[in-house]
Amino acid sequence: MRGELRGAPRVIRVAAAQMGPIQRSDTRESAVDRLCSLLHRAADLGAELVVFPELALTTFFPRWFVDDISHTDQYYERSMPSPATSPLFEAARQRNVGFSLGYAELTVDGRRFNSQILVERDGTVVATYRKVHIPGHASHEPHRKFQHAERYYFEPSNEGFGVWSAFGGRIGMMICNDRRWPETYREMGLQGVELILCGYNTPLNYLPDPSQDRLAGFHNALVMQSGAYQNGTFVVGVAKGGCEEGVDSLAESHIIAPSGEVLAKTIGNGDEVVVADCDLEWCKNYQNTLFDLDYYRRPEAYRRSSYQRGPRTLADGTALD
Ligand code: CDT
Image (cartoon, rainbow, N blue to C red; front, side, top):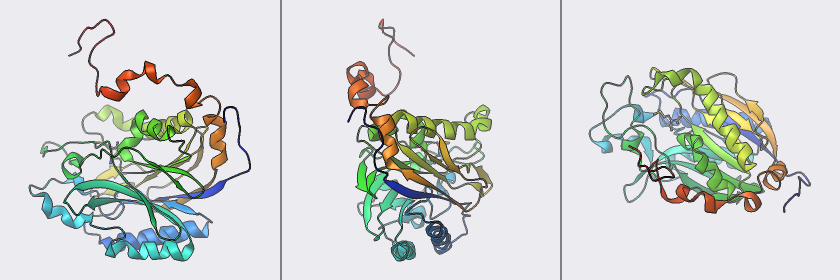
């Protein structure tokens, strides 16, 4: 309700469970062992919900190109829980802790998505989100030091950004590159989201424009803090960081408040857990005041956002190249 500020606390203790690298030779079982240890560490700290990174079960395989995509089927999960991940579901049930996990999904009809699930404390899968914004390239680029062929390995989802009732609040998910797009947050903001969960793998070297490299950490914080503030929501961004197969990746996992303030941040680039108490009622201080979307937004003035992909014409009709 407009003007209504936070009421009786609705606190959920959330853990960002950052991972260090997973090398190509590491087994799925060893990755799941690490996830279980992180989950136990988070549970020992009193967490009720643990957020893991994007593609948390394997190395970031889109950094290599193969001519026959079926030769990479071993990196994808065909069900969730899958045989390899069932120990994680079991640990979560035992500890009465929910989690969100990123993985590569191969559907029964052969479609490939970069996906993230939300799992309740009893081990039930509440929701599956499939990555909408797929970065990188779709064919082999041999001149690059390493590939970022996500557009070859994953289909972009057209399912959009859902928000689900869980953990006493309204929870949404996004994956890595999604966090750089304001539309991602706003789509969830328009569903009253209170907590957005995001896993990421972000190389510290952006090969198309190395001038951006020194800003990797700044841009990571910038987009998540702005998205949180402009939609009055908590944002939890969790990295798979460190040096994986010779590629350095950003760590700097964050838990961010609806004010845009950082509540917790990892300090290293390996397996690490940080927690924060997220009072979901805090969202009201933004969603019912400055960012009361229903009262202040002007969708009739934003028409291009819903039908146009990139720049086209100026107001005077001048066509852009
Ligand atoms: N995994 C992922 O989406 N990473 C991208 C890097 C893109 S570089 C081609 C990101 O936005 O962090």
